[in-house]
Length: 396
Image 1 (cartoon, rainbow, N blue to C red):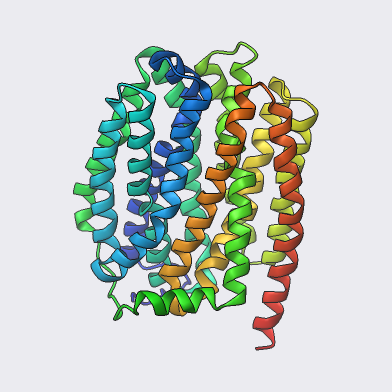
Image 2 (image 1 turned 90 degrees about the vertical axis):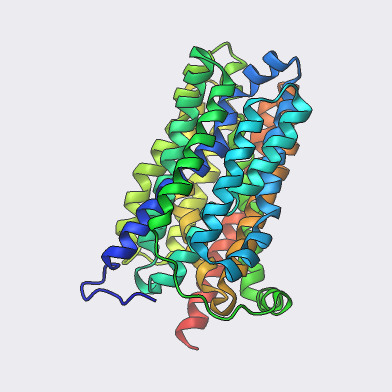
């Protein structure tokens, strides 16, 4: 493991590797969220319904989540960097298959495969940071990673909509395939962290699933995915139902990514002085406020305001839960992080699956009301749980 610099910053070689991981995270988030701005366009072009195309988004999230534990096992044996490069190579293939999809069924399969491949990008980056950066300064690079993810989200909702308007939605899928392929080549320069002797899979799972704090974090991740990611997919469609174009609706909901980007800086500065419990409480309240606004009205103003509040909530809440996941079971960190991502995106897939039929029927307010109902217990349980975890750590 690289030594910690005297001034509390990560070593230069690690910093360079983290920048490449940030680009990988950007590409992954761009690929994951760009379909949100294009659902209606794809449905029209392929002769399907919004509900049918939303299955492609749900398949992506579900496969993204399920594949986590498999990539964790590969990562423990093959190495973090080699795993990311292999996953990106396969993701490039999936992206090209998505671009060539002749119908919705093909698209669902292609997006599911691509999601399963991009599943290695961010979790492997999290484990890489956990392997190379001490816990007391770990939230800063984790927040930087989240920032790159936010930029990918913002660019995806604006860029994918604009690409679909100016050329074709197929070009957007092909673009991420090319980006993934380029990263496979560039990441050859990254240094592979030393690998410990991998524990048996069963032992790693038992270490996590037998840890009550890890179980709490995993349960919170499931609800977080349902609340913060599931409905997010349909914000552009909400505006398009009122007659807005693809590019404009994508541009307006890009406020989400911009809010994550801006508030991530606040979280990064605050993480050394503000207790994680308070960060969780702030983030959860912001997310609940977003859905309260959207439940009352889903016009242009409320959707923009809700996008900003959701982005701010994600910046505070998710980065803190994510940091907690890297610490809750240090002896089985890769497994814990992979299961965290599995639960997060499984919750997202459930959210997209529940919201899809409702959105197809124009019942947008019910979608947001369900998210609000789930957000309240999430805030309470996450705040109380993190407070008790901190007390346990303080008193041994």
